[in-house]
Image (tube, rainbow, N blue to C red; front, top):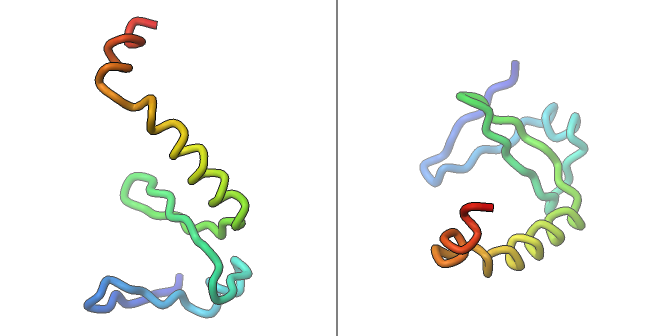
Length: 74
């Protein structure tokens, strides 16, 4: 098991063995997946981040109380 320490700004330096295992380089994007009281860290490809942001932005227009009422029974 590897340990890290949280700074006063809420930052953590990923230990070298973790960065090596995930093949992380400066500027890489990581995702946090919360599972109960544990968190998994994944390296994310830049394309996946761009796609996720685009899809999320597109779907937000359908996220309204009016849509919930109109389509709630489907």
